[in-house]
Image (tube, rainbow, N blue to C red):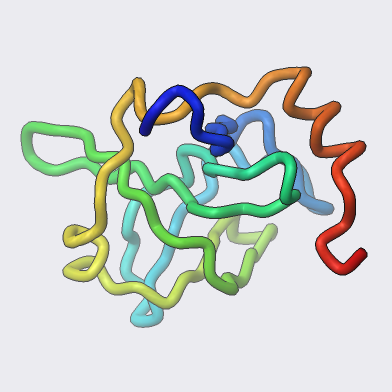
Length: 121
């Protein structure tokens, strides 16, 4: 991604849901297969929009961070799992996020998100 991109990365340990932190949440396929863990999200602060889930998956010799388009998903806080509509073979075809792909979400981005006009406005 270019540095002028409005997209930002926010680590899962900085994300909260009504049931607690999203750190350590397991990403699960429709067939209940474990795809990996939620590493973070790629968001557009000015649009107040989640664009991608970043799924950390390990292979024999590497760790991959796949960009899963943010589609409706079901979070089960008691199981600490995020259920998505993607199977493992589909996940492996998705683009990967690299360490320099997106700027980190900052305090300034939080201010932008707070004062950005609502999408429906």
